[in-house]
Image (tube, rainbow, N blue to C red; front, side, top):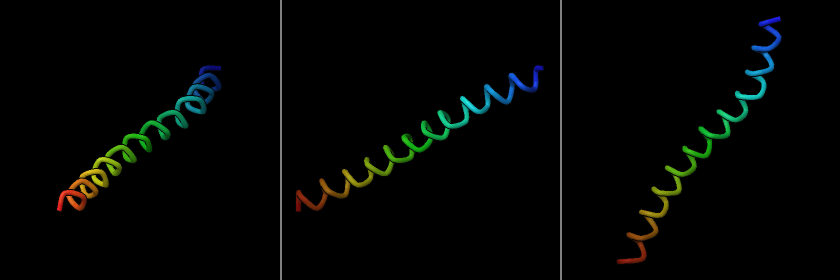
Length: 43
C-alpha cells in the first residue's frame, strides 16, 4: 500500500520538479542573452 502511495506522489512531484528545473535553467540562459543584448546595444 505504501509503495502505491509513493508511486503516486512521485508521479505528481517528478513533472513539477522537472518543470521547475527547466524554468530555472531557462532563466539563467535568458539572463545571459539579456547581458549580450545590452552589450551589443551599448556599443
